[in-house]
Image (cartoon, rainbow, N blue to C red):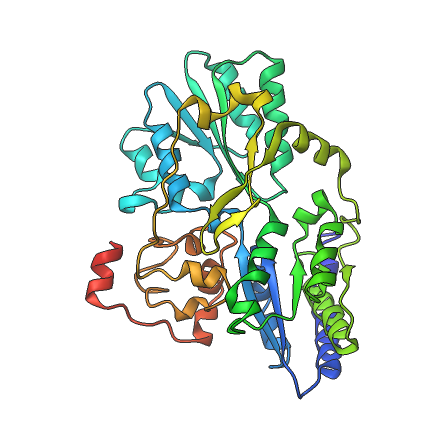
Length: 388
C-alpha cells in the first residue's frame, strides 16, 4: 500500500538496525520507554527486538487509555448503563475491561443493560437524535487524540438542543503521566526502573505538538523522540535516541514530521479548552493518583455532564491480586512476569486491562508470541479461584 509499504521495507530495517548496533556502546545499556501501546505492538509485531543489540532495552509505558482506566470508572459506567431507559455508548475495547466482581460492560449488556459499541462520538450523538425518548450517554475515554471529537459533540448537542445526551468524561493527559513516571520512587530514587529516554506518542503529539515534552528533556535530562508507528519509524527513532544519549544531549526531536509539528493542532486545542478543564487529581490504573492528569467538563456545559446528571460518586477499587497490570504499566515488570499471563489471562478471558486493549502490552506479547521470550508463571489454585 502506498505510503505504508515504504515504512515496512525489510532491507531498510536491517540497515537501520545495523546502524544502531554500530553506534551503541558496549559499556552501557539504553533503557527506552515507549509510552504508547501502538509502539509496543509495532516492536512485537515486526520483531524489532530481534534486530537490535542486547544493549537496547525497551520499557513499556502506560500504553493506552483503556489500559490505565481504573476499575472505579468502569463501575460508574455500569451504574449508568443500568438506569432505566438509558443507552451507554462507548468504544469496543472498553466493553471487555473487567470491573468489580468480574463483571464488565459486555456482561452488563448480557444481563439486560443497553450498552452499545460506537466508532465515534458522533455515532452516540446521532443515536440521541433518533431516540429522544431515551437517555444516551457517551462513555468518553482517550488520551489527547480522542478529546477534540468529544468536545465537538458536546457543543453540537448544545447547538441542536438535545436534552437527552450527556458525556461521561474519562479523558486523560499524556504529559501528566510522563511526569508521574519520572517522579516515581522506582525511577527517581530507587533506580529499579532505569529510564534513559522516551519514544513519544505520535497521534497524541499531532494534537498537542512536541512542545509539551521539552520540559522533560530539559528538567529531567531525558531525550524524547516523537515517533510514527511503522517499524522504520521506530527504528529511526531508536537511532536518534542512541545518538542523543551518546552525545550527552537531552532534546525533543520529531521523527514523525509527516504528521507532527511543535505547536500541534491549534484549532483542536481551542475546542478542548472551551469544553474541558483540568481535574486536580485523578486515578490511573498502575500510576495511582495523578495530579492534573485528566479532564472534566466545564460548568458552562454542565447539562451535558453525565457525572452531574447521574450524581456519580467515584470509588477506588483494587485490581485482582493475581494481575500485574499496574506493575507492567509502570515499567516494573514484563508481561511474562505475571503468573496468570497466557494461562488464566488470555484475550478470550482477560483478567486485566493490558490483555483487553488492542494496544496493551500483554495483548501484544500474547498476539505475536513474545511470551516465548520469557516464562509465563503457572498460577496457583488459589490465584485461579480468586481471578475467576
